[in-house]
Structure formats: structure tokens, C-alpha cells
Amino acid sequence: MSGNLNHHKRRLSIVCLSLLISACSTSLKVDTHHLEKSDPTPSIKNTSFVTNSPNLIIHTLPVGAGNCQIMSCPNEDKIVVFDCGSTGSAEQSWNVSKIQEYLRDIGVQTSTRITVSISHPDADHYNFIPDLFTQPVSSIYASGDTHEYSQAMRNWFTTQSQNGVRIQRFTEPQHSTENVPDLGCKNNVWSRILAVAVGSSKNARSMVVAIGFNHAFQAIFTGDMTDETEQYIADNLSSTGVIISKTNFITGAHHGASTHGSNSAQWVKDNHADVAVFSSGTRHNHPRCLATEKYEVTSMKTVNHTYTCGNANAPRSTIQTDRAVFGTLDNGLLLIEASPTGGFKFHPQR
Ligand SMILES: [Zn+2]
Image (tube, rainbow, N blue to C red; front, side, top):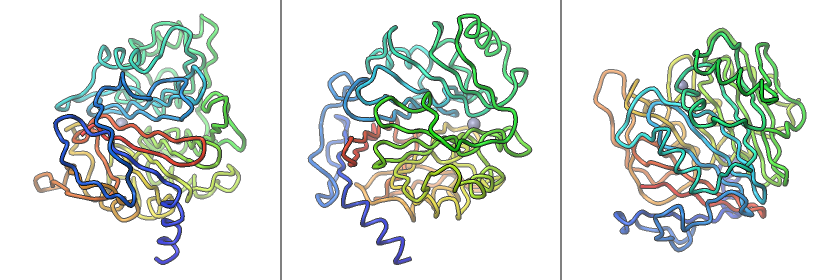
């Protein structure tokens, strides 16, 4: 336990945080040890959260029961899309037109290089993509065979391919032992696939990607991975070169499910991520409290906030916490911004 605490303190010393507080919630208490003065600006248009800034930014969009994460590359006109889809509504679930508007707001234009990474062939991870990216993108990484996707998605793959776009498909278990430049950025953002096409279910076969910025910030995108995927990652981690305990930001696997071994205690402990985010709507009662409570133990301290989580045979619980655990269902858009020198800030919408 003391090892974990020391590890955490070491990282906290380089972390600088501030909250982007929306106009309707200006009374959040700020812990001055960990947080800088809050920025009261609620509009994305007036912030630095645009492409081509010096910082690496990960945008987790509140799409409801699905996943849609955009990484903006530092000093480069490029984004990497880690899944984008939804199959269930939530109070403020964003649809395709809202996401298109958002992409314009953060500076995505026709010249922007776009890599699309699809963790696995479940619609809640890809069904917005054909309508979002009607022009040729730069490259595509997709787990699973074409026939596992919807007709609309198959048509999109065909059109992209006819336009000369390279599509990297994964149907056999593998991981990367060196940088995957398309999934990272030109300026010191490396990327590794920790696992893909592993196991017996579509969820288990999710592509899990780690990215790092200057060896000072690390994030992991997990898709809907299960215990089989976790085991494969543990068995092969040393050959990826990724030190998993350096993770600062993590997406809770499978929207925070607790079935099929997703979000196991060992996985959460090994990563020891500072910030955990769960992308979900009201379907399937995600995230499950059994999952979020594990991240409550390992994540860093922040201001008091509230999120809800689901239980098997009981009403949803409302969690009051000062730990950096967030759900898109309750906390909305979540931005995390890493500077080239190692600090990072995160900004829940509410
Ligand atoms: Zn899913």
C-alpha cells in the first residue's frame, strides 16, 4: 500500500490541475494543493482545446450508451478517433450533427489528418462514423472482419478503400512491439496496441491502445475488453515496452461493466490511473458501482463532484466523491489536456 501511495505522490507532484467549471456551477470548492485557479469560461470556442495547440488533448464526448473519444495532436493538424458510436440515449447524448459542430469548434477542417480506430465491431463503438467522416480519412484501424460490421459501415469501408485509404484490419490476436505512428502523433506522441482480436467474444477482441506524450503522460483506451483481454495484456506487456503503472488517464472498460471480468481489481491496481472516465448512457445500468469503486481507490484527489453508478438488483447509487472518477452520463464532456512538460489538466463539463 505504501508503495502505491509513494508512486501516487510522485506523480501528483508533477500534476497541475484546473477545472473548467460551467456557468451554472460556480461554487465548487477548490483544493489549492492540487488545483489551479478555475477557468470560468464555459465555451469550447474560447479555450485552447483546439487542434494544433502545443498540448495533447483527449476529448471524451457524452454520446450516451456508446463510446466516442477524439485525440487532438500537439502542434499538428491531426486527430485520432478512438471509436464513435452510440445505441442508447442519455439526458444529453450527442448525435452526429452535434459532434460535427464540435469537431468544427475544435478546429477540424478538410486539411486535418484523421485516423479512425475502431475497437471492435459493436455498433455502439462505430455507428456514427460513416455519417461523421464522409470524406476520405487518412488511415483506418479496425478490429474484426468486415462482415461483422453493419451494411452502412461496410459501405463506408469500401468507399474509403476506393479512395486509397489504408485499412488495417485485425482478425488474429496480436500486440505491437514498436510505435504505431498512425495511432499517435508526429510530435512525440507514441502509440502501442496492447491487445487486439484476443479471446472468444467480440468484446474480448477489443483493440486496446496505449498512447504517451514525451514519456510524461500516458493514456489507455480500452474498448469493451474483458478478463481474457486483460490476461493477454499482462502476458505480453513486457514486449510492448509500455510501463502500465505510468497511466494517467484511462477509459473504464466496457462502459464500466462488471461482467466477464471487465475492470478487474488487478487491472485497476496495475494501472493505478490518476483519472478514470466511464462512457455510458442509461442502458445496461452502466457504469456498475462494482467497477467504479475500484477506480475510486486508485485515482487521484480532486474537487468534490457527483456521478451515478448501477447495481444489479437495486436502484442506481449517487456517488459523492473527491476522486477523479467521472461518467459522461452525469459529468458530460470530459477533456484532458497534457502539456509537453508533463503536467496535465482535466475539465469535466459539469
Ligand atoms: Zn460497447
